[in-house]
Image (cartoon, rainbow, N blue to C red):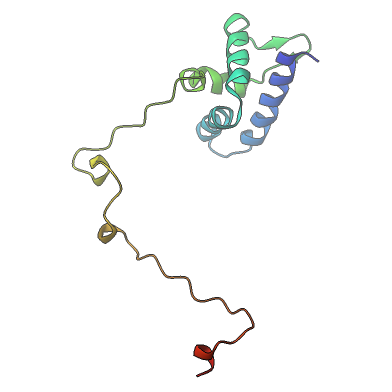
Length: 128
């Protein structure tokens, strides 16, 4: 089995998993996101280079599924190694535009202190 054949088979397995999603667009996005997050950049580059010269995704008897081809075509820029996708801009006037984390007073909850764990040994403090 060649390296590209192995990559095609891996991508098709990912595609089979996300093909079961009821929302096709979400499935396509999830395929691309999985490949971007979990594949080594060399693997992504090899698959993208191969698809650049073989857009049908065919390698002998092995072919990239139509769903995977669509996911890669739609998200090619995001999948390219070394190019991090730009986050969408925050709407004007939202807290997301402020730099840094929100102050603790803006949090919807207060972090709780962990209760003392019972170790089975009592101390003078616990028995009185």
